Amino acid sequence: MKKLVKFWQDKNLTYRLLALVFALILFVNANNDSLQSIFYSQTDTYTETASSVPVELIYDSDEYYVYGYQNTVSVTLSSFNRVQLDAEYNEDTRNFQVVADLSDLGVGTHEVNLRTQNLSSAVSATLETTSITVTIEEKVTQTFSVTPTLSSSALAEGYTSTQTASPSSVEITTGADTLARIDRVIALVSPTTAQMENFSQDAVVTALDSSGETLSISANPDTVSIAIEVTAPTKDVTIETTQEGDLPDNVESYTISLSTDTATISGPQSVINNIDVISLPIDISNITSETVQTVALGTDDYTSNPENVRVTITPNFSTTTSSSSSSGATNNGGTSNNGSSSSSSSSSSSSSSSTQTSSTLSSAETSGDENATVDSVDS
Image (tube, rainbow, N blue to C red; front, side):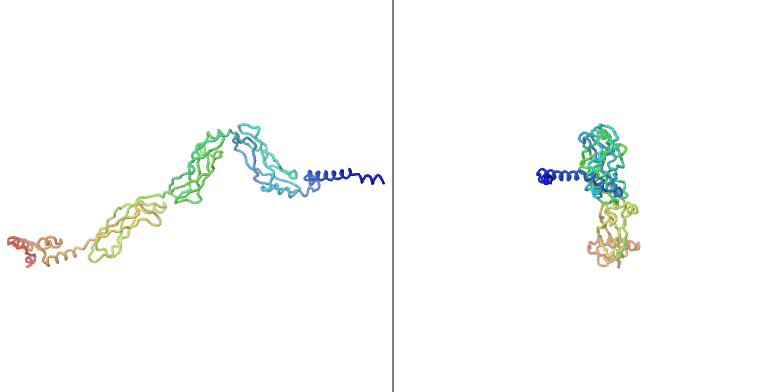
């Protein structure tokens, strides 16, 4: 009994017990995942498939350019611990990566095994794809001009355009062999609807070979802004006039002249295809003297060059009105000179009257009477 009491009173024993407790805590913490798998039964296994897990390459990126490989894989994850499994499944909390180690490989095409790293020991992983093929080339960089390019459906029918890229050139990084194959560098603009007006759009920089195949590159910047100036289709047409309104009583007709009788119209192809003549309605009501009007040629459907045309409207008075005016001038004591300017209808007088007129005028000139009038003829 005394020995037992002495045993518990031994100070070293207390330290030994504390040390044992701490050792047990450390052991449990270090082997927590393994211990869990012992205490959980097989019926509690959980499984999730993570899709599109990125493949990370291990290589000297300053010296080599790598392309032509599958860059994502699917990974099936299994665990007895639901919390650990969900943490690795969720890409925001995931610790593991799928890697391909190219450190010992040189220029050329190689098949490389995939593996996971940094995966929790409580979770197991099965890769859907176990290896990938990669092509390794020496890394080079060169500046190229960018050619803006429109898709075939970018513009409405008949429309044309000019494009400007900003910036106009980019740095292309790729493999040495791939660089030698670059035929042109483009930025493809592909709007969702056909355009009929100026617009701009950002476009991804792409390198093509002589056959139009896309090459693997890294561009800086990888997108450029493209400004597109759109031009509508055009067509030359004639201009004609049509009279509207009622003629004044003393006007027989009008002579209408245009500053130009042709115009160039532009607009949707479906619209201008149906236009050969622009017909201008001219209202001649109450026009009794020469009048100049400016008439617009374009409409909401198309534009015109020129935008306007000058229309000169000249009335042609009736013959009856002219004859009446001439007769009135004679009866009011016009001189012999004025009498000669009467309308052509006066020429219908009989030849005997003409002879008498000539005789009388001759007598008046002989006598020196400057006040002789045509009235003496009518007597």
